[in-house]
Amino acid sequence: MSLDYLIVGSGLAGLMLCEQLRARGKSFVVVSNTSQQASIVASGLYNPVVLKRFNMAWNADQQLPAALSAYKKIESLLGIKIDDQRPIYRIFNSIEEQNNWFLACDKPKLQQYLVPKAIKNNNSNVLAPYGFGEVKYTGRVDTKLLLDSYRNYLKSKDLYLEETFDYSALELNHDEVNYKKITANNLIFAEGFGLKKNPFFNILPLEGTKGELLVVHAPDLKCDVILKAAVFIIPIGNDNYLVGSTYAWNDYSNTPTESAKNELLEKLQKVISCTYEVVQQRAGIRPTVADRRPLVGQHETHKNLYVMNGLGSRGVLIAPRIAKDLIAHIEDDIALPKEIDINRFKS
Ligand SMILES: Cc1cc2nc3c(=O)[nH]c(=O)nc-3n(C[C@H](O)[C@H](O)[C@H](O)COP(=O)(O)OP(=O)(O)OC[C@H]3O[C@@H](n4cnc5c(N)ncnc54)[C@H](O)[C@@H]3O)c2cc1C
Image (cartoon, rainbow, N blue to C red; front, side, top):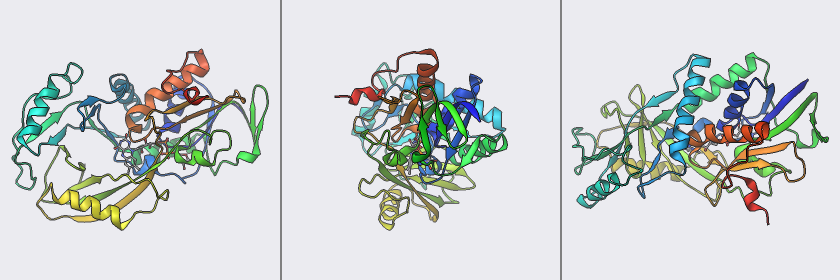
């Protein structure tokens, strides 16, 4: 089989690459296992504002339109609804926080996203005596539905090989790569934290941050906005809510832990007063980088090998734009933005 591209990994990074290639009429096959779970367990939030520091998230004004358009195209391709646009209500803990909100609303870049008023809390099951600040143009992508549906779509077109990529079976020639029965002009690795096992790119400074979240059933909560306190509480329908997430740096397993559950419940109890039941706990490893920028680019020696990784804790927002940048780089010879290019780590 002779192809334009071989892609390794079918998380958000891999799928957004597929979308770019599909749009350009390029042939490709995806090889993927399910060893990494970040995309499938993610809360799926997209939010252009960093609510801790009241800054715009890095490049969010460019990434948001690319993301919204990408998810819309996938919805129409697959006949599913994955983008649930909903405001985030940031809970104020004090009058001082309310004042900080109004200061943030005056920042020119934030003006279009932050609503300049303190919203009164009318929900007796939400503990928010100082009210909320509303963030606009936010929402949640149902990443599990996205991944399950997209993988099925690829399978139906014979474009998906469900297997662990065998790096030792890769033959590298001047202008093509051979992998088992596949010949491709280019190979892009998008393995998330699985990159650590990739002999071509494992020199990159990928760290990995474990995240866990809960699904709780809270029939009395009746909240239809995304609440942001020490945790996010995200309505997902049928009186279920995602509660997340944790950050841990010394455990690289996908196994849920009791300590993360307790941490999340402790924080949840500071926000809601009604009863609830935990119905699920999920865990995965975020592919994080110390400088908080993606890892994108070409292998130093093997020119037909590329990487797209380092999406950190904001893959939903940034993957569509980064995939576009990488494919434009390969196909149209457009330079990658320096801050995402892996060449920044060259000594
Ligand atoms: C608990 C939690 C909550 C999160 N919440 C959010 C959120 O609200 N919003 C947001 O934007 N982001 C969130 N994230 C982060 C987001 O999940 C990541 O940014 C993103 O999913 C990373 O996507 P990826 O495709 O790079 O990696 P992954 O999702 O890890 O995908 C990599 C794929 O490659 C496959 N693979 C790896 N090695 C091999 C191999 N050798 N052979 C074959 N296949 C291989 C893996 O099995 C996997 O399918 C969250 C993450 C966690 C863990």
